[in-house]
Every structure is written in structure tokens, then in C-alpha cells.
Image (cartoon, rainbow, N blue to C red; front, side, top):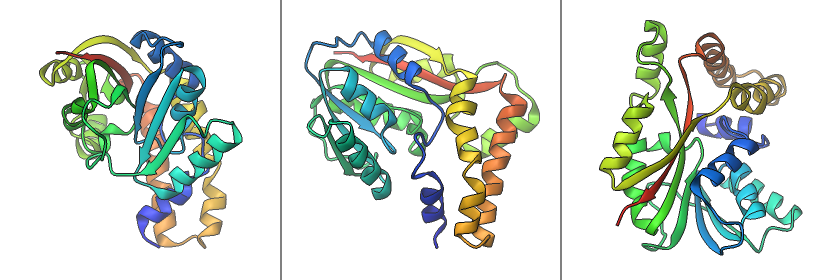
Length: 250
């Protein structure tokens, strides 16, 4: 089995495929000034199995166009939407976030939680701007340094994993250069990492390994996830996800 298929299998039945939380999605909605009565068109890019998609559709008067590269995640989302009576508000399809078929200025809001790193924060901010109507909202969570200096071990880890990691000031400058006016920012709490993501994921490791016969590739994937968890637990004072909300300038 390809490593990507293993990764999908490990994550497909989880509520979240990265750090986040319902309270944090609601906080971002509030900072964005989204009116619960006004009809909205929203794109949720890199939606995974749909934690934010479902909440947006449930809380807002919105039609949500959700996309993810993984067919298995989209299938999970469609099932959840049907079970929650939200199928009429959610359109979910398989698309790459760097090759989207959306029309220009089709959306009031472009949303993306914990996914833009797949193509890079700056590239995503620039590429997705065309899909927003004038004055539209970009809401993106992105791994962010919390301090100006950090331990060499942590710096080396993230320089290898995601060289585009930066402080909030650096990310805000990127948004400004890309044609946005930043209007809100906050840091995801520890529970978004541990309670909502890492601990549920850790609880799946043994069944995942058994399912794949403790293969070399399966064990390597679990070890990589364990190393990432250990890195967060050791150095969580230095980095987190930042949630950035910005408005498209004219």
C-alpha cells in the first residue's frame, strides 16, 4: 500500500485531520463578522472529513462548497452531511487546492483550517484571492511561531517540515502584500492539539498497526506521528496554529 493510502487510512475516521476545535471555528466566524442571517457562499478548501464545513453550514445561512484531495475524506463528509440533514447546504467534491475549478468572485468567504501548508501560506493566499468577491473574507489557520527565538532542535524540525513557518507578524505581512486587510488573529489553544487531535489519533495507532500487519511502512508512519506529538508536547510554548482573518481589498 502506498504511504499516502496509509496516511488516509489512519486519519479517515477521525473528526479532525489537524489541530482545531468548534469553539475556535466559532471565534473565527465572530472575528470575521459573519452575519448568521445573511445568505453566504463559502468555499472550505482542504476540508478533510468536514469538521469546519459542517459547523459553517449549521451556524450560518450559507451554502458551503467543500473540497479535498482525498476521496475517502469527501465520502466521510457526505455521509456526515446527510446524517445531520445538511446535504442541501453542502457540496463536497474531490479537488486539489492548487487546481480549483471555482469561478472568479464566486464566494463571500474562503475558509481553510490546517490545510494551506500543503501548498504554502503565501501561495494559497494569493491563489485563492480571485475566488473572493470584493470585500470577501479569507479565514485560514496556519502553523505559527509564538516567540522570536526557539530551541535549535525545534527550529531544525520545522525548517525541514515546513520552511514557511513564521511569526504572526510575518504572516500578516504576507496577507497585506497579497491584497488583504487583516482584521483578526488568535492562537489555537493546547486543547486543539491534544484533546481534539493528537490524543484521538494516538488512540488509533494500535488498531491501525494490526490492520496493516505491523508492516514497515505502517510502523514508520506511526513513529513519525509519535515524533510529531512528542515535539509538540516538549515545545508547545514556542509554536501553535494561528487563525488569520483578512478582508480582500478592492
